[in-house]
Image 1 (cartoon, rainbow, N blue to C red):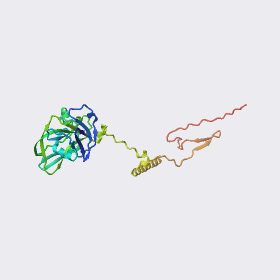
Image 2 (tube, rainbow, N blue to C red):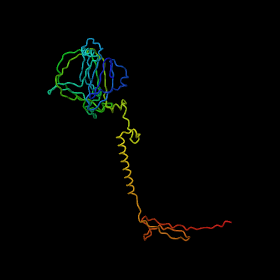
Image 3 (spheres, helix red, strand yellow):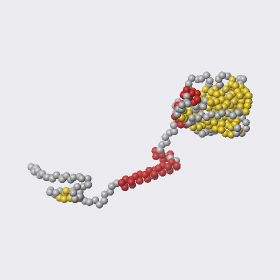
Image 4 (cartoon, one colour):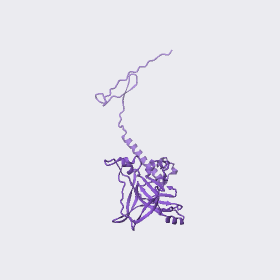
Length: 329
């Protein structure tokens, strides 16, 4: 679980909590000054995702008004959610953790209030263009494929109605900017009309560093398998090689159908070979005659008048056979 100290962040995909996988390479490195943890989660193109944040009520407030969970998606800060000290007290009285969530970003527009919901989408890549500056790739695309949750102590300032917000899309990404990372999915903000009014608070951070940082690297199942984080799907054993007693009714029917089809193919192949085989009808017996010594001589010459067959094969006369009688004394 993505838990650091007294805080936890969770990712939900289409309403179901995403399974988390350890990032051994990053977590095994030198510990940073700020407490940080990284997990992998599976992304599904076209699915909505959201975050849930939790804090232990044993946390001790020391002058701050609230604890803020700032959400960064693909390197860009999208929104922030906070929990006041009063939220901690209410949760504690019920024996629960203090919690809040974020499913997107609110924006007041001419057509009314909208919630731009977090959503996964296919990543579109392209070749390098003239306007691309390779020196800016790390800044623009280095955090692509990551969620970053920064947990801060904050002071709350003025409250105001949420204004129109500029929404950015990742757009197409140069292949070279991925640097071999198995990324085939990105994120976008999909607008949904909502009722009511949303308010935003200004805030000022307390301290120079966040209390903790929780990161998630989102990847498709195929990418997680290529990273050996998930096992590859095993190659199914052919029905013909599996024990009959293990086959289901449907598998038995499928196996029988395959055997019948294979039998029909073999039968057709045999019939085809039989049709192509040469047949000899009205075969004439070979001519024969008696030799000088009483032996039977078969004549292979053609019936043609010129004495040759179609292949112009000449007959070589057989040598005469002599019999020698030896007296044994």
